[in-house]
Image 1 (tube, rainbow, N blue to C red):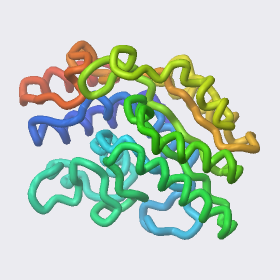
Image 2 (image 1 turned 60 degrees about the horizontal axis):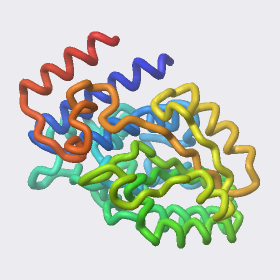
Image 3 (image 1 turned 135 degrees about the vertical axis):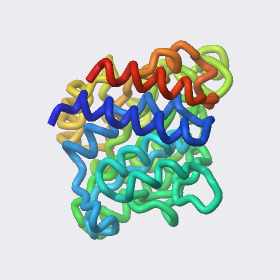
Image 4 (image 1 turned 90 degrees about the vertical axis):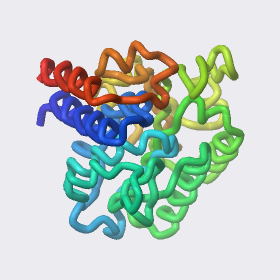
Length: 270
């Protein structure tokens, strides 16, 4: 499979989804397309026909604003019909703005309150160890989210419990809701912080490169402790007008004209 082509297809689905609603969290959704594609296409033990399969790998996207990206990926894998994407955050939808495990097949944990999804991932990983079901627990957190104390409490727990079945990612795009991390509450040096908390740390220079992410996951699977893969990403990656919006792309209006412009750019890369 051409993973780069798959990333373009997922970005088109994200643009369609948010464009149907007319506004949404597009910046942080576009920045995590590559880790989603690499995980779902190459690494995760899952069965879309049996979303509750015992012993399956889990993905908890703690940065809940990225729901549209997760939905696009799950749809692509066949968890639900593509028509669902046109209902994002609308009355009666099964695709709320933030992921809800009680509404959407393939969602392993309800997230959105920053920090809480990561704590849940540690609990799920501990339960998997107790059950000895062989599952790997993947989780994605945001860099703005990493300012939450709950992240670091969970990090201490993961290291102390020797949860080597956890592979986490930080979407390190350096922007949060209303500004640059460096101007609000900087988390640098991020790699040193995670090492100090007892984690195996792998820094990926280009966090929007499928090959680099794949190699990092393979390396992380060899560790005898939980791993944090730091992805240096670009918020809004792949669609120029979203990238260029900078901090404004956390949540931004997406008009039909913008959908057409973005689609033309993505199709030009295919």
